[in-house]
Length: 290
Image (cartoon, rainbow, N blue to C red; front, side, top):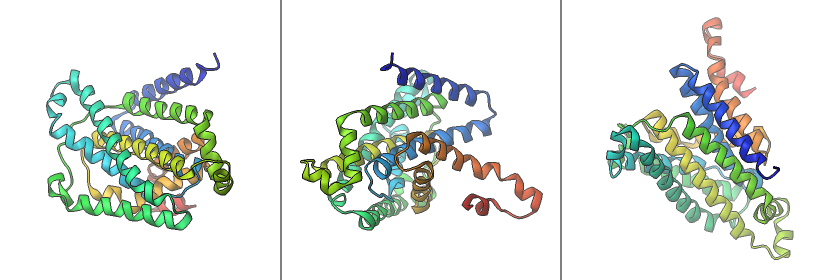
């Protein structure tokens, strides 16, 4: 029973979140889906920044790769699947897999050389990667360029968003219960001591980076099919900073903390919106910062 407990809890949490979402109006549903996508992003970055102890500032780049990959697939090779509700799920699944694959490959290409660095140097490299992706998308007319990618079919919904979030939580739990997770923690606590015990720290860090990038890519795919429109400005430096803030606020390495912080920082700006009507001054960013 102890072995099945996380799966039962994940199924129950998914059912509760989906039920809450379906009982809301369209605005509430969109906001609740944003919470789920943000939580998935925070959980993915927690693998690198929290559990492995590295500092990445380019997570929005992996999200952008996944979002544009899924959008391209849904309006191109797999467009026919989205014409019928019965096959739209297959199209979305294909988009999620493609997003995870391409973002994971990008994570491997970036992580293999850059994760030999530490601290500020790693942050600078990942920040540069995120900006390269944003500027490249800005100039790719085949993907909409500065006008943005339009015509993305609506797909997914709360079951896909919160189901994938629950699977990501289970993945993290199983990872941390195994020898791979203990190796990641040892690298975080003291990389020199871990290598002295025979651990290949670069291999473990790259593995965590690839898994983190793949989860961010799937979050990007869900983002694309939730909002049906993409623009490179949505994946800039400040988007990466928002995800980092969620991880730090929730507690480095804490899965539940990352999810709660993602929910708080997604809902807080909307909850503070009525203050502008009461005071005549937009105090949201001030209170957000506090």
